[in-house]
Image 1: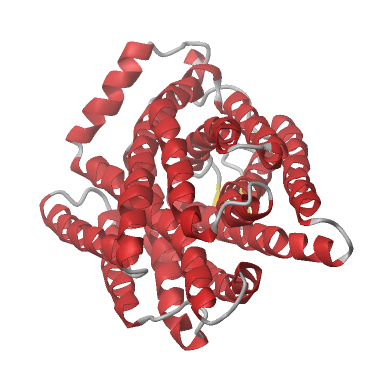
Image 2: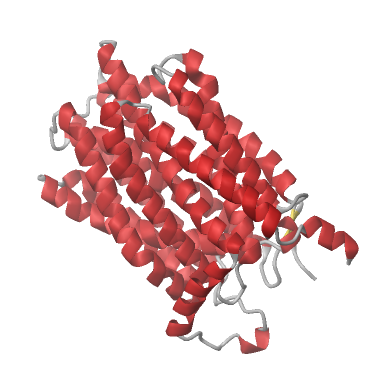
Length: 437
């Protein structure tokens, strides 16, 4: 008999403790990963004294380097998930990002900063892969949409929570007599401690071993060559190919939102006579409101996904993103609260893309090779971030709206592709299939 957590049915062999631990990881891990981008400008300013005019390029280069590492390691981490299990990869990644946070503010040169970012980047690649894999492992098929929605909601709360902590803590420490560089070190140390504690929680609470379709074959280890072939052959399924493309988009738009909304706030705030700290403080309410509202949309969309064909759900997500990101042309500054509705739509479309993508690939990927398939999916996501940070950064120098219009164009392309696949190869409607059995 399958276990349940509230309205969510769990896959065979998955306990409530496993799922509660995983939901905790969704909040902590994504919060930490997003928090590094949020605090980046503060570190560059107070630790290395980088001029504001050069921070955009350095920030883009750091993100670019991190994604090069992700591209190189996402596939191997997916294979490791299938060979040694999800838990060791989870703990390893969390320990590495904790180390990255702890040593980051001690960099005395840009070279050292890039070296320290490498530790964080390896951990981030590990977590990005294993989070996606476990998202596919834990829910029963009829609850996949609800599970992914809960996962996405906790991601949003994680981003929100760490944005508030990392955004306001340095200013609070400085107002209590700490020097800016000391405030930076204490802020990053707090993030590292949270990561270390979380690694222990993951070790105790996540499921051990590797999921199998046949429990009698639990000790069988997949051949590495076969796993790689599975990742490539899976692209013959047009719905998995669509999922890969949507993963590219999902990671790209999260990167654009995480990097360029705050950068836009600083740029427009400078024109208004605000300091970077003041600009970041003023943009936090925008982040809070957009994340809270997107949380409700994730629940609603997850409920919808469990009742319709999942390619149809992808079509809805792509259409919404196309419209939301196109509206950025009407925005002059994220600090102007009259523009808040546009950023709410953007945030809702971004989380909708994540939910739709995870639900579709979770349905289509074979259970035994799911780690490899989703590892390849994460590889596409890394490329999405790579392009978003490099091309998006150059577009931002032309116009702050540039990176967002780039995402709008990708949404438009995938909207057309989704409609085509919905007509030619829609796959199953799980709800309908369930009712007829």
